[in-house]
Length: 394
Image (cartoon, rainbow, N blue to C red; front, side, top):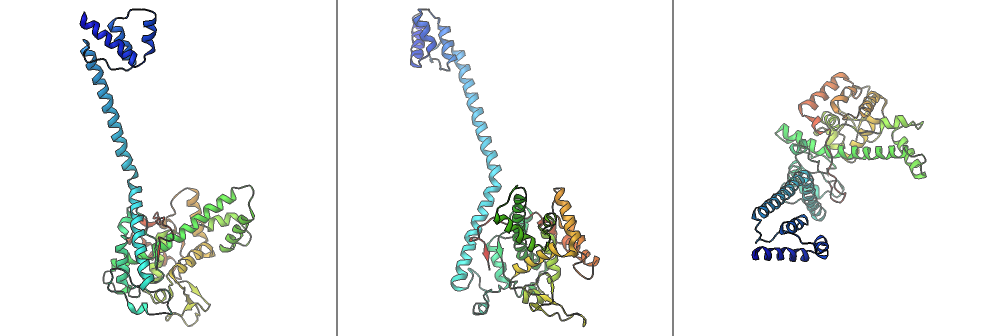
């Protein structure tokens, strides 16, 4: 009895210690509680019973229950942590890639601006460095290969979903055609033109978003109306037809753009591409052109030349988005938009028969280039969202 009485006192002390109001009311009412009743009150208030308790079985049950709950909570926390790691892994990988690219790009720009040389490359053509009249330095093939390697810029990763490095070359390497490996030459050409194509597409996509935002407003500001007028002029729309602007202001599938650039420039080795940055073989009857050597006597056209590769891509984009010969191309692209389908090169290439005199044969050639080089893999490619200061323009 003495042991029980002592144990009961311990229980009462615990009630006082944890300030359990229920036990106070019992004490004030002078109601005598049994040991079991006090234990139940403590348990109900989640207070652990003293180790000296004669109710060892009950204490063991409480401890087991608490341990199980603790283990469950820990397991949930661990699983949540692992799941979150898996979820953010692509983001972490993308951020790491951006940081690495930014670091290497700054290193290249810093070295190039100070002494015209690239880090860790022995084959840089120093004669190009000495050409004061040429502000756009032409990189030789080896330097370009080293550049892409140092920036971890490869097509395998892009096919797996990695973003494209924002490397913008102003000119093609003069000796690109000297690469012995045809596949290596093709891969290098794709890596040169793809950032330029994606950058132009991004500008179009951004303008397209702005267009729909403006059209969805009941009233537009003066600045928005001026912006619309500039877009109508840019896309050659005289009557301010909004429906036509929606059709024209849209992206060109990278697979088609790469295939046409490859066909028209001989994978970056043609005279027009190397001398005039003309990657898409556009004709002109003006002064800014290169005279073809194999044209017919009754032809007086030239191949339009450009100060840099980016200008060639922009002119090509404007050509497909405005010329009447590609109306079917734009209409089919608009249908894909309405159905929320991917703007795919394989879907649209058949509507480019007016691009060359060979018509359907030209389309067959483009389809062959697209299929053999798996260019549709790049139709969903995205450009790394790097700041202008971090992008690399050479």
